[in-house]
Structure formats: C-alpha cells, structure tokens
Amino acid sequence: MADRETLMRILELGRWAPSGDNTQPWRFEIVDDERIAVYGHDTRADCVYDFAGRASQLSHGALLETLRLAAGRFGLSMRWSLREPLVEHAPVYELVFAPASAAVGDDPLQACIESRTVQRRAMRTTPLDDADRRALEAAVGPEYTLSFLESLGDRLAVARLLWDNAYLRLTCPEAYRVHRSIIEWRTRYSKDRIPEEAVGVDAVTARLMEWVMQNWSRVEFFNRYLLGTVAPRIQLDVVPALACAAHVLMRPRRPMDGLPDHVEAGMALQRLWLAASARGLLLQPEMTPVIFRWYARSGTPISARASIDEGARRLAARFERLMGAGEEEPFAFFCRVGHSAAPRSRSLRKDLDELMVGPR
Image (spheres, rainbow, N blue to C red):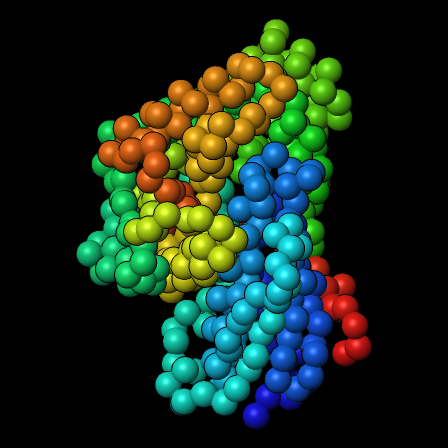
C-alpha cells in the first residue's frame, strides 16, 4: 500500500526529471495516501522556445515517466489522467498509486533517474553498436521511430544545420530575453538554471558572454561588427555536432494533435534518455531545429523581425530534406549521444519543499 511517506520518496526521485533550461514547470500536492496532483504550467508567455507550450508538455511527460519508474522502486504502479476541464497552459495531472506485481520493480531504467544528465561538451566519436541502437529503439516503444545520423557526412550536415539555427537564435531579440535569464554565471551547479560551467563554452567566452548579454544593444553591436555569434556557435553547435557518436531524431508514427500527444512523447523521450544512460551514453537535446520547425510549419511568427521567420522556414525545409521527411510529418525530439566522461557541472533541482503545495 502507498502512504504519504512513500509518496514523498517517489516525488524526491521524480523531481530529477528534465525540463527545458531547468525551469521545472510543475508543483506537487499529496491529496491522500494514494493520490498526487501535479500542477503543471508552461512558459510560452515568457519563452520563445516553448512554442504552444509543447516544450513544457514534453517536460511534463518526462516527469510522469520518472514518477512511474520511481513508484516501481517501491512496488507500486501509477496511473495518470488529466483533470477536467483542461486548461492547456496549466494542466493538472491526477496520479493514482496502487500495489503492483513484483516485476514492476525490475526496470533497469530506475537506477539512472538521478544520474541522468546533459553533456554539452565534446563526446567521443566511437560508433554506437547494434545493442545500443536496439536498447534505444526498445525504450521509446512501438509508437515512435528513431532515425540515427552517424556518418561523418551526416554529422557535418547536422553541424551546418545547427550553425544556421544558432545564428537565428543568437540574433533574435525575443530569444535574447530567454538567454540572459537562464544561465547562472560563475557556478558549477544551479538549482533552477543552467550553471555556467555546464553551458559548454571556455572561460574566456563565458566572461565575454556574461558582459555582452547584460543588454541587447551590446549583443547587436557584437553581432554586427565583431562576429559576436561565431565563438558561441563553434563551441555550442559545431564542435558538439561533430564530436559525438550519433544524432537521433524521435518521430511519432501518428500526428501529434494536442497536449496528451506531447505528454506521451515526453514519456518516451525520458525513457530514451534513461536507456542511453543505462548503456553508458551521454545525451544532449538539440531542440532548436525542431522548435523553429514547429513555428515555420504552423505559420506562427517567431520574431518581430521578418528575417528570423524567413530563416526558420528555410531551415525547416533543410531539416526535412536531411531526414527524408515531408512538411506534415511530426518531429518530437532531436538529440546527440555518445560516450564521454561524466560532466563536471550540471543543473540540480529545487528542493522538494519548494515544489510542494497544500498540506504535506
């Protein structure tokens, strides 16, 4: 049987779920000994990367999958549903826990919940083996397919795609408002942002970025006259794109029409990430091409600058050609994987007390 102490222990593990820029868009309430309410929210009002709340919805799914796996560690199963009426920008997930068969506690992904992290720096180019690919494909399940881009030519093509997406990202004033707030400078760990040492740039570039990003006028001056986007794009996009084993695109087999579809995709991506960790692989999401494609294919402007949207449409078409996909085919998650030493720096999480609402 579940009880409040066990539910708190499950939540302690669940809070390690990934979220875009470590936003942790959720709060928890223990309703009774068998039920938890998760109060989700999205960041679309403040973050250009959270198109229609989809990035947050993927994070909600990753959280639900993490909680489901954590429950198995305590011999419990978990069912979830959306509270009605649904408020899309602030969904409430109702979780019910019950005793489960002994087999539920045997999932090897449980052991990776806390150690799973992001590697933004160079990885080794040691190729994936067949067992790696099979494990990743099994993790996402039959509702999704994985495409692997592994050859040097493929990695060069992705590097060029990321280089050009990064130019849009770094010259978009709407994105600047996000960039200046998500990094905790001069730190190795951060509870609610990305610590500087985990960003993936060298110390000199970090100091320059910290100074330049204090206001948009400086950003524009450096971009226009001093090639200000070059060093970040080399270190954050080109080098990582080449220095990995593979880039992986996760595609659903059916259209993604609403919040539940993106939540389910988030559950699959968390299993993919945990399966990579279980195989000794590190992973880094590469979501900007996916997100800008969402904008482009929906006809939704990213920026007040028309050139940004024109660029996004061109890059969406290039991404589709690279993947052999049509304009209507949904892309859910894009990442790179490879072997490397564990990162020295990582995002932590808010303490559980900070994430709780209501009586404990």
